[in-house]
Length: 50
Picture 1 (cartoon, rainbow, N blue to C red):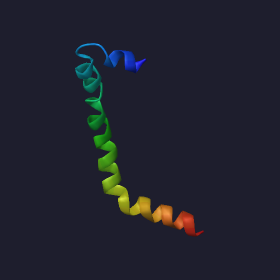
Picture 2: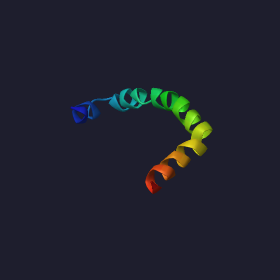
Picture 3: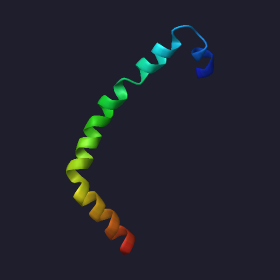
């Protein structure tokens, strides 16, 4: 279905505009991961060792 949209004139701008919110949505998750990275990695390694 997306392939038919790519053949339309101006569809590139429509599809690229759909991906604009993704960095904005990902930013809080990246910030949380950077803040809690020490605890996340520690928990993963403790779970792997058992």
